[in-house]
Amino acid sequence: MGTSSFSGLTLDLSSLFGNPRDLSALVIPFSHQEINEVVKALPSDKSPRSNGFNIDFINKCSNIINEDFYNLCFSFYDGNICLQSINSSCITLILKKR
Image 1: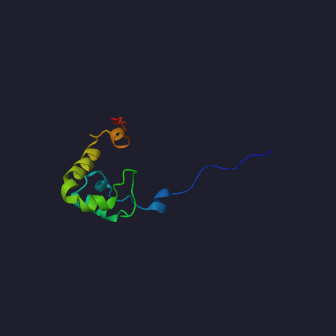
Image 2: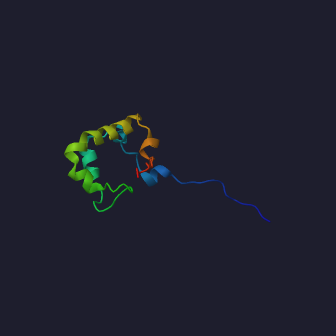
Image 3: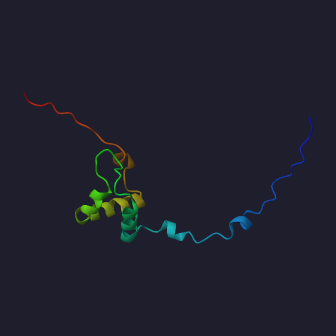
């Protein structure tokens, strides 16, 4: 059938990508300003979940929910949050009285 004359890659990856940048900013905690900028950049006419709370809700109620929202972000950064409880919900059906 034949033989291959391939002897390996001779690509110098550092010449393609240059020197690695300082990535230390990726491991510092979120700031309030960063969180606010991300929320402001989200589209306001979309609802991320079926609960109807879109970004307009977060913006209009920010004075009430900001501290809780910041605490949620900081807990996520610290790894002290149960992601399953955020990504799931329970529905309880209650019978009406006749």
